[in-house]
Length: 620
Image 1 (cartoon, rainbow, N blue to C red):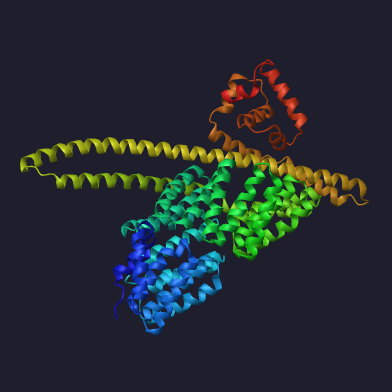
Image 2 (cartoon, helix red, strand yellow):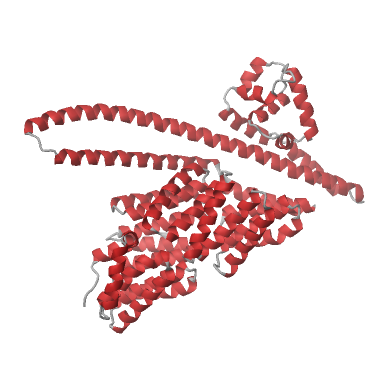
């Protein structure tokens, strides 16, 4: 009985889809051979190879060959072929989001591989079962399964390929749980293994995950750079599924940096690809992304229509709880912010919170609480608004702590440094190869070797110094960018907090006038007044501001000693280029009060009506 060698198995597993996609004649020869072959193990293996080609581009056709291979393998009692066919059927079902059915076949495959003592194959099937948990989504169960299998395959001999797969899926799970530090850490571990095994396809998959991590940690430019590189690679492979996925990611990243027209073009193209390959999960996500983009472009009703399609598709077709919660959350935000219909927003936000909480997605959970708090405040239900605001703040603080963000920045710098060192190592390797090919005399080799050595030492020293200087500049720039983000976030948080509290105070004042018992309302007003006048938040803001805009306060005091502390606060907020509305909320005064304060400040600084106060502040 003919069987696939380990080398052939390895080739099909990692390079099959790439090689076959690039060489259609190879696929044609496989199809012709398959038709002529007798029903034996060789034909089963050929079915597996054809399956690898169609797996992502046409899962239904892939499933057809998987079933045919399964029927032959069972008939001839080819157990490893049967196990692989079960695994293939599970993967084809998983890609069409029939996750419960997929698990049935994964378990059958795992049972056979365990009985054959094929640890690698069993480990890869276990990885597919974890992917199914990730897609469900059930992140906590996925992490438990990862730890269980990591312990199992960490025993001697360690299977690096399985270990790589487990680290890769870990990075994705941690990303969805908003544990970005852990996500980066395990992604780097996966990258190290892929490089050690020289698995180009493995490196590509890890880079795709890192691109998503960059997206979620506010480095959209780096994310877009990686995704464009991947898009060209997938187009060269004619990998329609990955093309659709990457186009969607590019659309989402451009949406976040407010390139809405570019985002829409990417997303509409992505939808075409995902529909072509019947990628149900991606269809629901792309409908959601198109919907929110239309809202930003001012076509609100069109955006709502797409968002509702995303909800229906995610709930009833793709069974994708995460994309459903995204669409629900965005619908709630649209009805509250865009249409001033908070009563219509609440049902969407209630379900969004329930879904995000059920899958453990903190990133979406805290945003849904924030949006529902705003809806309750708009409806005048200030008690629930305050409760949701506290939930939002608690989760947000746990996800985006300053220390964690700094660690992420350090990890990102390490990754970028590693990429640069890899390129230098590759150049050195090419130089070595050229030297080996050169045919020169021993004396010439010696002279050339000494010359090259001296040149290399000098070049290496200069290059290392340049690299250190560049890395130091990147570190300082990253730290400054981080501090600017923290400063802006802190300022906007102050504005939103004061806005909500002021609304609560006004409502309490109204209720106090209409109620017989005023004691409870008076206590609430005193509490809010205390919070509004609390200087701790401003002190934290001032500390962040001074780190970003060093010596600003001292320069202002030196040049304009007559400026008061309140006017200095106003100057600091103008320096950040905030709107009058945001400044009013932060300083807890009316927009009209801001106008008067700016007028008094212009007189004190002796600025004429033709001069710009904003330009003067920015120049300080």
